[in-house]
Image 1: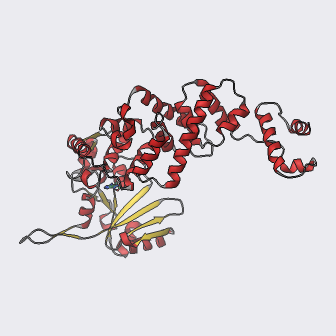
Image 2: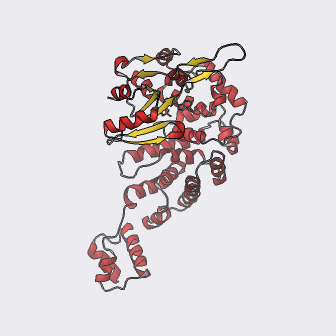
Image 3: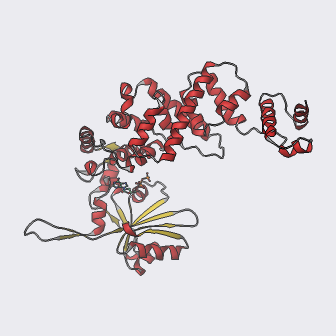
Length: 406
Ligand code: ATP
């Protein structure tokens, strides 16, 4: 259908990038990227009409997005015809626009296209011998200036390498080392860095990629304050593995609340640093203020609580509850990751599985029925009651009523 719409407009339409890569690898990919030779915006409008989806356009960049009712997302970009001006006498050369579009991509494995117009449907477009690199399982840039143009690609290279168990082509690895030497991260006024770091931490298993980042000496740019343990030493690795364990444990609980795993890993990496290090990191990589505030608050609060829990033995459930109740799930899993004592881990896991959802059986309305006047005292009474519930002092509604009346 997409191809038919392309013919109607008419434009040449191609599926590109990660979609084609995953198609050739026979992996599922739910994001379709389309590049159009011609008017991409027009194409997007027609496509949305035909597929019964909604569309959003970004005229300035000639891009659009079509969102299907089932959540399937199609990104559409326009490949423009570009002219290469050669100096002096040589003629101007017109490059086929899809070729130029593919040449500008990050790695060869992501630089293939599949034509969608019906006549040529399914034709693989591979100008740079990309399919061979995919077969060889190699991450390779398309040209030598790739990382100079966009150093955030370094993180992408690492992410793809570790996710798919590919290897970095030697020349590409050399270009990364050169880029690191040139300190291309010095000025990070580019939000792409943070997006890419976040994507690494959101991978199924980000630890090999984090180790690879350290191998390439990237920590010096990301966390200059971590210098003493610039290398991934045993303690550092231990915290990361504990973070992973906590995340896996939480996943298997199948609770409704989603956990942003990247936050847990980011906090864990900062496990041995002060909150200011995290704050400086956020500032350097232009993390939005709201996210920064939350990250810093979670870290400070979690560090404090972890300390308290470690120092005091035999806390009552209600005490644990009030200590942990302000932390998000990410902060809680972080506490589990940095805790050295099993009692602390146990306290947090109990809190997550049992106490977090705890509530009193009687409500404010019940209190009114019992003849109490509504007011600030209500909250205090209900909190006391919750404590009693958490500590097993009351277990039924009638016990709760007696507790209140006493
Ligand atoms: P994932 O499976 O992680 O979504 P993807 O390959 O689909 O991987 P996206 O970040 O969605 O990755 O990017 C889509 C495509 O856009 C890539 O396949 C690549 O061709 C191109 N691309 C993305 N980021 C860059 C970049 N920084 N430089 C060049 N090309 C890029």
